[in-house]
Length: 638
Image (cartoon, rainbow, N blue to C red; front, side):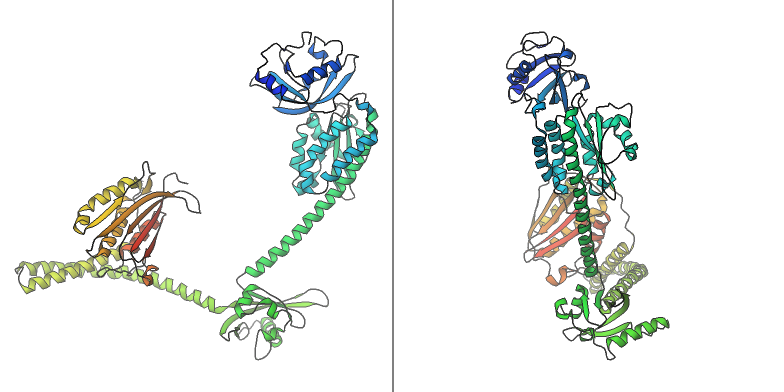
């Protein structure tokens, strides 16, 4: 291709040429600074020959009229106005892409498949028919609009020959979450800078008319036109178009297309309003049903004739009848009273009016389907639906369940009181026990080891030690736990702990296994408190073997619960006899133990220590083994 404008002398294996020759439409790569075309494909060569049959211009500005209007974005679509040899311009839609970091090389690809066809030969009817087919599919629903509107605008630009078309939405599109999508499309258009000014002058625009924008904004180009859409109740939006110079002959089919879009936009708004209203009603009905069916009270609704029209799930469970068994039946068949439900209702409201309530109306005993009697608290409400229909609502609360909750609360309060009392009692016991130990040591000093008195003193001393240990545990459990937290390497911590137990393991014929992972994360913990927990678990396992030998295994790993965040999982397992089924659910409670000489405080205190570390401990047991699993939060484990 002759002339200074084209510079295609680089190696044909260049990656840019590979990219160009993979395309089926005209494409070329050019330099902004050098104003030269560096690479082009065969389709581009034909395209340039079509524009300049007898040779190309040497000046890049003589080839493309508006190349300086490039948008400063990585990829964008626009219309290049190519000069032809006869002095006229040829508008062609192209896709521009920056090819390197310096943004000096631009790849331009022709996206209009009919680039070699003269637009003036198009018949308006053919144009309208093509656009109408796409419009009918894009405006079927909100989803179709969301997926196809941008492509529809591109098709209108290509088929009609206008440079750009966009839609400026009104606030009604915010209700359907479409406003931002449409504005995103507009941000890629050349007229985006004028949208705010156009919106300020919006009220001056007549709907249904194609107007020049410079009639509203003098500084705007006079080739921009606007078409406003409005229905009977609200503003919908406006189409904004860039019409090329000398192409006013295309305005008639454009006007027709806009009128078609006007009609479809109104229909789309109506469809979306109806759909949203329908979904809202369905949602509200479902929500109301969920609320009524899941509240803690039973709800029964009767009509004027005291026939049941609604009963929720709580009432069904309360009486033992399903809704289909009772709806349409008299309320007296379900709620049986000696005076009848009508009289009960009258008595309830007369009691309210006189502000007297002796409990004879609000608390009643009813019968379940099984014949069991249960106490029930009743509230009664009335509402008038219209002049002829009124309804009575019975709100029922099973007092049996309330009584159980009250008793549980009393038990918890009683336990708290006993805890305080036990702490006080422990203090009072400790001094006499210490005195007894002193006198026992004096007695033993007056005897020899073979004397019966010496042996009896030893037994008393052992009992005093047990009482003293029990008092220490009670005081530890009743006092607030204070932790001295520091970074703890659990792998090294457990290795050192097992090392101190080695002699006991050998004496009791016990094997142990522990193989910690490398670089295990640290935790924040109190080493002395944690040592008490693991010493207790290991000591319990040794006691369970009863001098018959066994195996103790420790494992440490990372675990992520469903609540999120990583935890250190430490398991201590043994192959002992296990924990009895009737005891395992209470194993962490004080005074619960399977040991012959235990007092049941070790695991209760251990659980308290682990909980204070924001962790958890649980036990799994079966004949032939027990596993304690401890979860502790690791540092930076979220």
